Image (cartoon, rainbow over all chains, first blue to last red; front, side):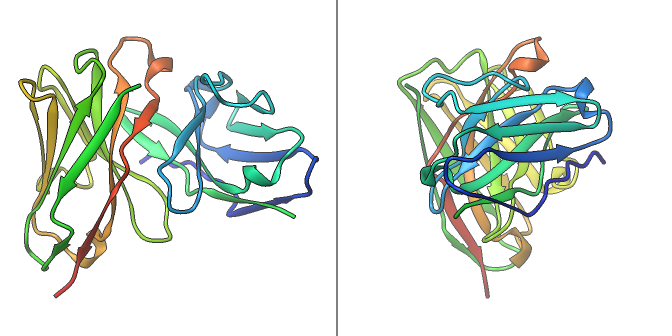
Length: 106
Length: 122
């Protein structure tokens, strides 16, 4: 079965750039999405189709996907961005999620 | 803005069957796949399966033998039944929407219900 691998945790200082990676076999040949989940809340789509921001998502969120790695980048990270982030792709009609990355802003 | 409201039993005993229903408000029901995704406490997301308004289904192979997802287009609702529940099935269950289209890039989950905690315990 297809697997997506994320680092369990990433730390960033306020105002700096955070990068969260998602690795999978030839992931660049698929579309990757990213979801943000804050404690006690439902996930929210922050990046679709590798790099598209849905309406209402701040410009500081961006995405890329090439080779075996998709990356979510948060520029000028704010305290409100502290959350769990999940990547997701499709494999043979099955939605696959990465294990999630806890972003700490400190 | 679509609203997804879900309900169902929150506490089950081992071997019982989970039944959840999700109602879709203020939005089109056709043109989308309606999914169930779960999240064990403190863990990551797992896709369970999905159905569209025509009744076409896709299931996670790991749950397929225990899973039935159905749709009631007259009420704009879809439901999940998962049999032989065990402690490992304890999770928050979400109902979720994604576009039903040929373009693979559009198959992202753009609206999520509030989630329902289902606990399996004797």
